[in-house]
Length: 221
Image (cartoon, rainbow, N blue to C red; front, side, top):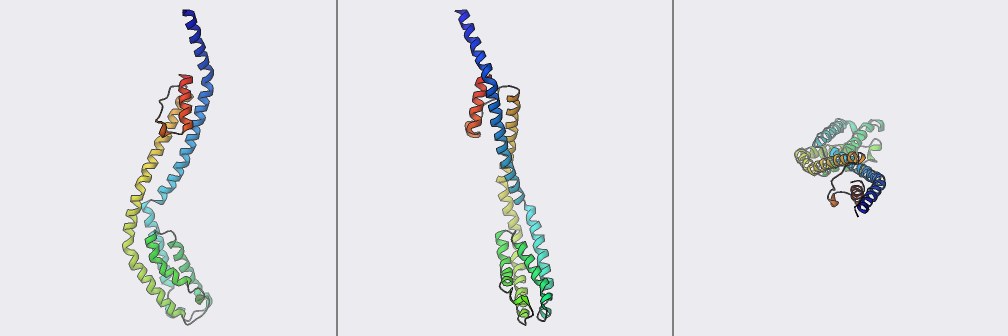
């Protein structure tokens, strides 16, 4: 009887020895896939963090203020009323620049810029050559820019606060993904060295990885 048990134990050990290499490789493959998935998510989160940096608002503000000053410097209404077509090019360029700067702004601030850019776009034909009506358009544009500056001034701080609030869950996600990456690398090292690993909660990993870990534990330990 004792000999029969020894034979059974030997067979069981032999079976595990045969199954372990394949189970080990399957687990490493599953971990590597999980690492790739986490890396992809971390890249997305990195992009979101960049877009939700409160310092971005300061950069956007600087760009808009620079673009606005350039527009104001070209709105010499008396001069534009008598300007030739080539002389009208700079004012068109600066207003295009203001429109470009506005595209990156938070919605509330972009909304305040819109009347200026819309007034420009509605009068592109007027600005194609000399026209006595340009002086009146210039006056309206100057008024629109002044109103824009007044409306925008109190909006910057709330914009920074809003983006900081939006950033908090993204930072939590970033830390969670970093922890996942570290955990996966720990498992990979353990499996590579054929060491036992603790099974995670099934909801925390993919079905493929969970099943591979279960088989690995059974086949190799």
